Image (cartoon, rainbow, N blue to C red):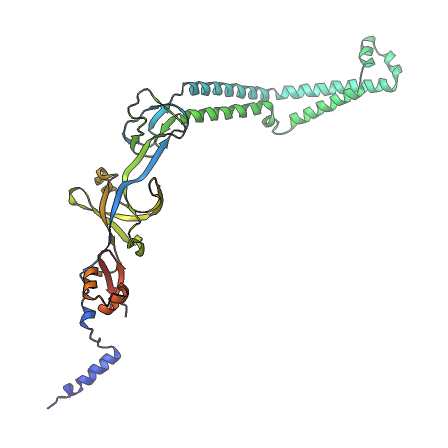
Length: 382
């Protein structure tokens, strides 16, 4: 006898499947992961050069005999690396400062004498106005000359009204300039001060440039031409003095040669290498740069930067090439499928490419990324 429940159970199952109450059974291929599930995907194995995150070449700003002050090793910002012979420059600075002091004193005296100059100009104007008036009166009425004292007649006989008028206008113009606001700023005394200040700035700049200081903190390595030189070396402007390397942060420079690296989002990758004691060290992606090399010309480089703590532990490996792995850290775990084994097991499926082959061999899975030896697969979206 069939119970009511057993009678209606098939119908209930069909209705549940139709309405989505009960999930449809998946195939074994869809449920089974194509490989181990991992949170990191190995994209490529690369050769990386460990180097300082910041390095700066020091060059001679001027020409002359240079005396090295800093020894190879750690220096701080503004530490003196070396000096050019500067006895003549120091003397030039002292002379320029003395001339500036004298020019400023002359300017001070000029400003202090302004009232006296104005009074002198007004007296001169008054004298010229009187002489011009007498000369013009005599010119109009020569008989007036005989009424004047003998001492006053001689100057008036040779007076030139036009010339006196010109002198008077010039003196009035001079008084106007004296009364103009800012007259002292445009005076010759002020111009001499400005010129003296410019000279001081120039020679002081030359004196500062005679001392080469460290622009960043780091490890200083002198140029080979300066190593062992005790009495100073003759350098031309632009010639190398040495190199400063900031070892507080190290980067791994990876040439952009792997075809797999250009296919992934590098901002979601990290670089991992084995350092001292077999410990693993991770570096985060910092950016891609184009650099000039003497052998290959311009080359594209990916930079991965280590933390400050890890940089200290890796300091002894600076300027060495190491083997490292680039790992993708996806948002969700990925299944790792061996590329060679997949190609051997399913040659026909992967003939048209990895994307098509994955869909054929592993239904329900999608190719996320391709590495040198593995395929990274994620479940397909419904």
